[in-house]
Length: 226
Image 1: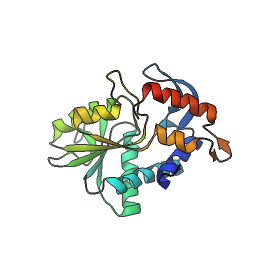
Image 2 (image 1 turned 135 degrees about the vertical axis):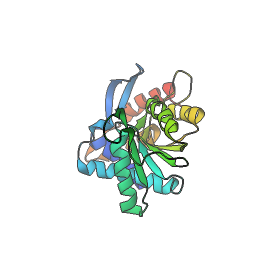
Image 3 (image 1 turned 60 degrees about the vertical axis):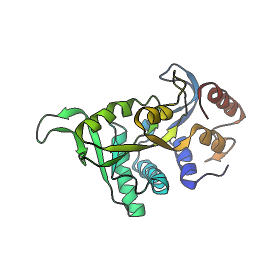
């Protein structure tokens, strides 16, 4: 399978760092899945730097010029937007603002719900998140941002799209487009992961053999929209 080097590098990093796991897992929706993605398992500076570079690579490829500020929903979006802003400047000379929200409003000092670039009328925000499951974080922060200023939010970048359908038959990415007009740009999808890792040795280990591939394909056929 031929994919962009940064996409392949992200898949390999997720596998070797334990972010991408294979076995038997119960998802939040109660489904029994043969794979699971937990970005909370990134835990070193080297991993954080690499992940931010892959976000920056996709943004540089597809979205430069379409936004002014990177926004990271609390909590996982906070380091992602900060590190990605730094990677964009370091690698591509693109200097943009970054902003993230607090879970609870600050009641002392200058107060407020936001850290970094405060939303202003006319700003173009690009949301940076880890994965998208039910779109909960966007549903929480979208009205918060819009109630503060007339900000334009048209795009969102995530590391992995599981492409799973909700009870309405739409994926979370499709729901974001329908409800908010936000286009979701994943660095990789579950099909990218299946195709790239199938019978490929990464540091001497095969993560998706023929049996796991069949299990994943069955899950995708039942619950996902390709």
